[in-house]
Amino acid sequence: EFQTFQHYFKRINLRPTMSGVMAAGTPPSDNYIECIIRQPPPDRDRLTVLRPTNQIRWLQTILRNVNTEHGDFVFNADRLIRLVIEEALNFLPTCDKSVITPKDQAYQGKAFLKGNCGVSIVRSGEAMEKSLRQCCRSIRIGKMLVRHEQEDLNKPAKVIYAKLPPDVAERNVLLMYPLMNSGGTIHQSIRELKKNHVSEDRITICTLFVTPDSVTKVLDDFPRVRILTTEVNDDCALHFGERYFGTDK
Image 1 (cartoon, one colour):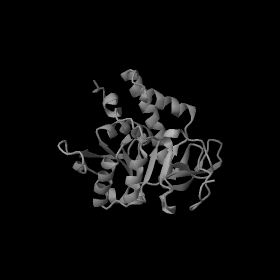
Image 2 (image 1 turned 90 degrees about the horizontal axis):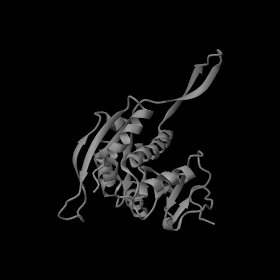
Image 3 (image 1 turned 120 degrees about the vertical axis):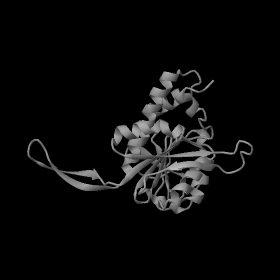
Image 4 (image 1 turned 90 degrees about the vertical axis):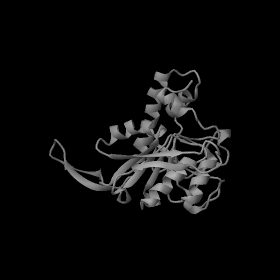
């Protein structure tokens, strides 16, 4: 049995490549499970992994297959991204709303509160903008360009360009980038958001593939951000951006 931190953990089956990953107890919805990396302290239950259904595993298989054609890659990547974005919306604040149905009956539902935005990290993160627009047609989207030093990859990445909504400090931010390999790019992006007075607990990282080390790096320094992904695996799909935009060899 797993240790108990803030809530009960139940045992689930994980692939051998995901050693060290535990899943939290009863998930708040059927679409995802919350995971804890390497037995973190109680405030570390900030990683959410989509439930590995057959459909999600199939989409991941297509994206990892070296023989997948460009058109098929883009089509299925968009499908997987859409699933992540749809789930990310569940973390945005809502309020109760009453409407009248065509049968003149009152229906008690929900409505999203205003004050949300997306931020994509150039260039791979731009692949996720389409799905966000399809879900939230009028949402504002900012951009960041983060680069590593080509001469010394051991140096931390730098934010070269950032264009954010002027009131970003008052918004909930969906930070979009499909990969977290070392966590350096996301790390610098969060620092830039914090420089613009965005609170950590308002940041949700929307990504497709992450490594255990990258999650540890990000949550060590920013324990209140949330990470939403489809897979935790030591083999990160580093080819994603080039294959999505058709610039691979």
